[in-house]
Image 1 (tube, helix red, strand yellow):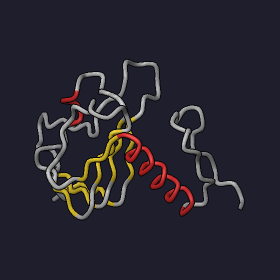
Image 2: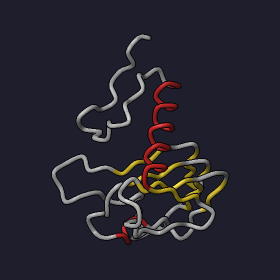
Image 3: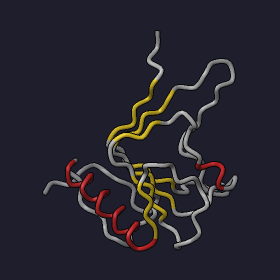
Length: 137
């Protein structure tokens, strides 16, 4: 009697290399070996990536059964013209300087709303300056 849907709502997702492996992975890790995977319902969310996944662009496919509601955005933070992943229908795609500016804007809105200090536009490495406990304002 489990709910067959996983709801992702008002979420910021950025794939970034955080360890010593060959690169980034995938948006979701679903394995429907013995049981069917859940359906994903994505609403008003942002997905950002800046490099090709370690196992090629096929890694960035959204599930076939994914449903997109509201305003969803896919940001290519790398160089323009190099994004080779899937661009789902109904999802806004941005690249280059506009995508990087959008990511910084949305990330800083989230940080401020949760009591964190905003981050600079040159702050890209999540391992160099991970989000820490909020500093008093």
